[in-house]
Length: 250
Image (cartoon, rainbow, N blue to C red; front, side, top):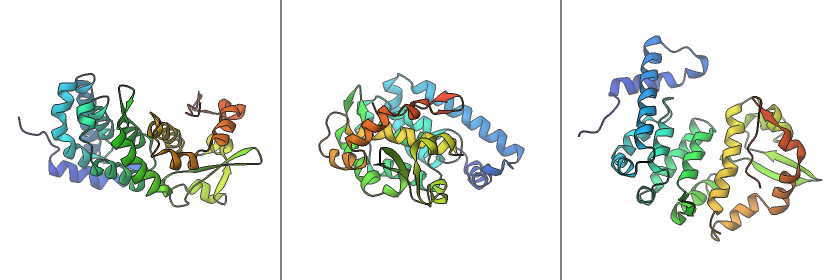
């Protein structure tokens, strides 16, 4: 069959409305369109879940799904499902796929759903996909470090810092603050979720004793730092929305 697509007029309308999403001032027609398209994405994910043949077929729709990213209709989740635990599909990943999600992190926002997609590319059935691990580490950790927070151990305290453009809360306090305080009081849940998902991504980039990625990851998260985080009872006690954080440091 022919490739399903969002009509160009509808896509343009959603794109124009994206900048006004924060204000909640969307026309009712756009809200209805977004609701319908979001339900389509949910259905798409269910059709793919646990079905490798459907995932293989869905690869032809990846360029179209990429065009829908950032429109607020859960297309990132749909793309993630295409690649999840499907070795034949994961071997088809290119720099363009990774670059698109790094661009979203930079331009749309630091959001966990984008790093979770990159994490999915790193392994299949518990085994690492080396070429994707190398690709993501090079393009994100080496070439776009400003999109990541940095941690350091100082006098027994774990401090977090970040680029002022992409982590403005840290910029307002001089560029760094104690990690436990930042996690507890950062006003943006998306940013905290992004930080958590980045830790999971770093673990995925190192999975299977990836020696090529190890130097960059060890420099970013040295063992004494991880040990201090794992032993910090205050970090384990931090909650957001009544739920404990799931920091992947063990």
